[in-house]
Image (cartoon, rainbow, N blue to C red; front, side):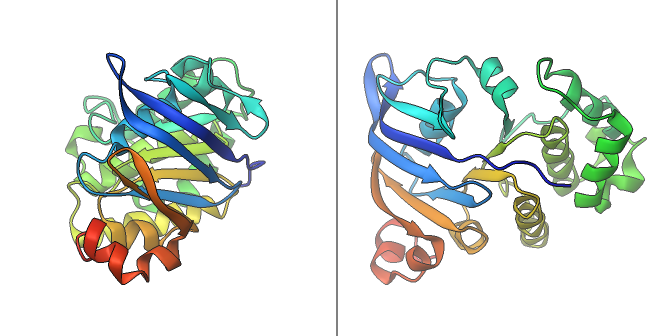
Length: 243
């Protein structure tokens, strides 16, 4: 399974609530087929940033490009149709529906993008998530937290997005399940999907990423290779809780 990767670029984003900016001139590029993780202390604007990328918040200033396409004016549903998948931190599966029904909804919600035959795409996605293959007839609400997160990610991948945005994917997971999830995230990137992550676990998030962004008080404090950020003792001590 592979897709044609697309980059995500933001330039000069100013965004917030009620006309009050939270983000102040944020710029970054998630390169095609790579993983970019945004980290930073609580209240730094990470949630505002992912909501702005998804179109849930309209920027006061700045632009967002998916490759060369300016998606700044697009609604959330239009961005989904343009090839942006999203896995929210909470309420990301339908608990009373089976795993298979959740995966089918991942395709049904995207109406305007060409799709492969469902059975073929299902097999491709299950190859990425072999842990949920035996659970297809199980109601999602009966799964463990780690399994539910896998179902949510698998559902978001069903319509073959160019970019997958993940909001705190390791939140609430045991250390073992969080490690497993990030191995799967790396596996997804190898299929050509670009990944944009907001993550609380800086060691795991940056450890699995190509590039990183340290956001502090709505501003980019540091950007660069994830390994360089992790290796910067001052940044770790001041902004990443010593991770």
